[in-house]
Structures are given as structure tokens and as C-alpha cells.
Image 1 (spheres, rainbow, N blue to C red):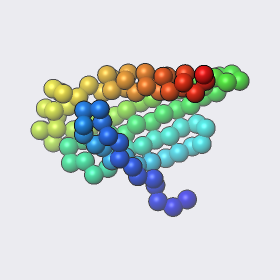
Image 2 (cartoon, rainbow, N blue to C red):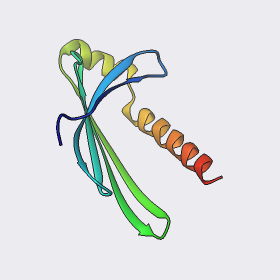
Image 3 (spheres, helix red, strand yellow):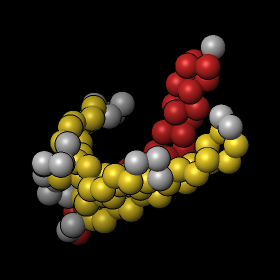
Length: 101
């Protein structure tokens, strides 16, 4: 199917991250990973399971890896992956609710 899709996301803190599709299993899972980042390596996976007519159960996992000592310090002091995932889930729920209205 060609090259994986690559895009940039602008963070609320003002930074940017470049991501690419790692794998897509239509209707079941989607994995993306960070690229071109000298400090961190990240991989995010969403797994989707239909649990009824119009309902889907989702499971998200995210892995952060610091690539050097400086990045480990930054990760420890300033980056909270659990809070980031919580924010993402809240944003997703808000958007899905808007689409249902």
C-alpha cells in the first residue's frame, strides 16, 4: 500500500511531534510511532472491539523510551504519560459526543 502516512501534531505546550503509521488492522487496531526525535521514542497502539450495535470498546497503550540521560531527566520531571493519555481520552470522548448530537 505504499509508504506509511507521516504527519506532525502540535502539542498544547507548543512543541511538535512527527508521527507515522506503524501498522493498521482495519476495525481492529492502529499503531503509530514517533520519528525524527533525538530525545524520545514513542509507540501508541489503539485496539478496538465491537461490543454491540453502536458501541466500541477501546484500549490504548503508549510506550515512552528516553534515548539518553538528558531525555530521562526531562521525562521524569516534565512528561506525565498517564496525564497525556487521560487528556487524549477526554478529548476523544468530547469529540465523539459532539458527533452524536
